[in-house]
Structures are given as C-alpha cells and as structure tokens.
Length: 205
Image (cartoon, rainbow, N blue to C red; front, top):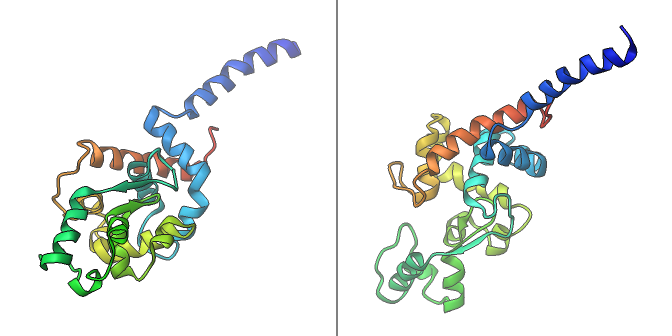
C-alpha cells in the first residue's frame, strides 16, 4: 500500500476518534471549559475534604454567570428586607443575632444581602464564617465556599446525596424548590461530565 493510501485510510479513523472525544452537548462543553480554566483551583480547594471536585465544578457552572465568572454578584432584595427587619424590629433571621448588624449602615446591609463569586455565597454568611466580603470576592473564594459547604450541608455531602446538596446550596433546605427548575437535573448531569474530563485530563483523545 502506498504512503498516500495508508495516510488516507488512517484519516477517517483519526477523525472518528476525534469526534468520539468531542463534548456531547452544551453542558458537556461547558464542563470541559471549566476543567481547563478552573480545575487546578478546584482540586486545591477540595483536597483533603469530602467534597468531590465534580460537585464543586457543577456548582460553579450553576451559580456563577456566565459560568466561571469570578466577579459574579447578585443582590437579593428579599434577604435585604429580612436584614432590615432584624435590624430595626428584631424580627429573627436565621442564626444572625441582632447585635451583629444593628450598627451597620445601609450599604453594609446591602453587601450582606448580595451573593458573590464562583459559588455565590451570601454576604451575611461572613458573620458566621469569619470572613469578609472581600474574601468572598477574592482569589480564595473557593476555600471559603468549602468552609461554607462543610458547615451548612456537609452531612449531605458525606452521604453523597447530591440532589439534597444542590438544593441546600441554592435554597437552604434539603427539599427546597430551586428558582431554576432544572437546577438539580443540570447539576447531576454536569457532575458526570466533569468526572469524565477529570479521567481524560481534559483531552479529546
């Protein structure tokens, strides 16, 4: 067989191999993007914990906008109103004692009512975690996200109850109704895609 024929015969096989390794759909492609842009950081953050990297990656894909945007922020008017009620009338809001916020001005309350970063941790959780708003917005966001996850729903993580974990992160309840109807479904599927890219080390071949 001539060199040309051998090359021509090998080309379709190589093409099929390439196509077989390509992302299956938009969700798969998104997780490949997150793998290449954030995997080292994700692995460092979850190392030595019970949180698998594929869960953290899927969470990032769901919470940040666009996915993987470190500067994601979302002001929550409902949370702001709860903080106002706590400050001025003492109406209970979660674990937050009134004396923690009674001297805060409106700008600080708004910061506490905003979620930040790759996993959208609410600012008011800083009162419990011992971090600052700057920490949630900074380069060590994922380390604080790990601390938050382990403290708030580590039990579900250890049980590998991923559906409950996604619901807890997004709603604060294991049976909470997420704002996005396909939030849990997308999260579970994206975990599988990310696990695949870890195994393939982000390679299409």
